[in-house]
Length: 165
Length: 325
Image 1 (cartoon, rainbow over the protein chains, first blue to last red):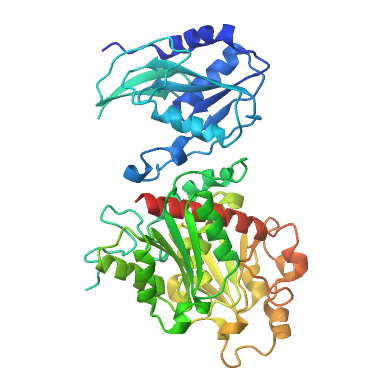
Image 2: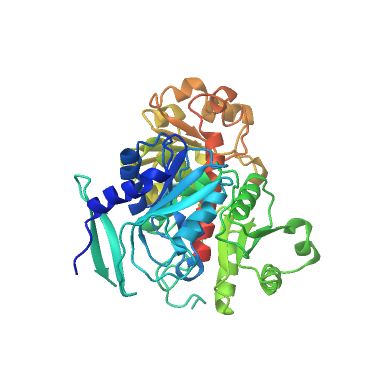
């Protein structure tokens, strides 16, 4: 299968968002780990002024009681005032929608956002919740046993890898 | 044959995951490191507008304190509440135990109230182990037990929060010299610290105390013993003070607290023998003017209050890991 070019998708995503963001007022929140990398790219490409936040949803996952606490939980950091803010949640791949639900729940523990949008590089299908992206330059259909993972090389280059579970 | 069956470590489940936290002794370095790594993101929760995460929502945590404690009980309570658990505090020394109920009857009754976790403080060594073993023997090993201090045996969450504090300030354990000073004989904290420091790879752990306050054979744990505090503090990176436990002392182990302060109290002058960037720790409650001079306790090298703050995150990590396993 031909996997999408992650670098090209980052550029396309930034162009899709550009008319809809206010560089002085829009804030990005990347979801660990791939979403944080994409948010870094978007922040630079869109010339945003507000520093981006990052969220690790380990403490909000709905499968905690089946799978326990995730082993490598990272620290969430929201370096701006969430109240009334325009926030774009950024992730690499949209799948079931459960991670996005968890991220929104977490964001609300920092305040009441004015508006939340969702930006992803690709939508791989398989949604289990009524969640859809506002900005998404690509989609593909994968089997439930397949994982599409974003990876970052030592030189910072982003690429996709397909993993069969 | 114990109710834990063939498992080599009664704290671990059949997948090798932490099911209870009873003692640091015997836990592999990977598990200690994982607890410290997991505690780090929990420190950030305290910075939020809503200081809560939903992990233990709908779970009941019973703080079973058969012995008085303010700091430990409070920090366990805050930790459980920040995990969204329902917390029930029982001070048993003023309750059923006085009416004659046994430890295991108390535990059975609370288990019948759908307890998910017991946090146990007891004057007798082994009490939390006994409860965990009883729960396993009666098919209730989904109930997790955390030792919040048992007799002279162990105080694992204190040991872990001390390790978190050391790692926060010193980053790496493998190039440190650490001194534990004071009443080692009566101290469950010292035992947990020693096991944790050695497991995490600290190359030199020193114990500084008068002979009367040292358990016999302490060297066999792998520590260097000093009876002269000045000699023992020379060049150390971390000074971990212990509380002089007057209430546990029987007979004349010490001439007087003034004499003790003179020989083993941490003064600025003695601290100057340690490395210039050495940190000073104390598990609390402090006896100012007995084991520690106020000038040190309130000075720039003391990290005693950060220890308390880190303690909440470490206890959150432990409870969240246990309840998820």
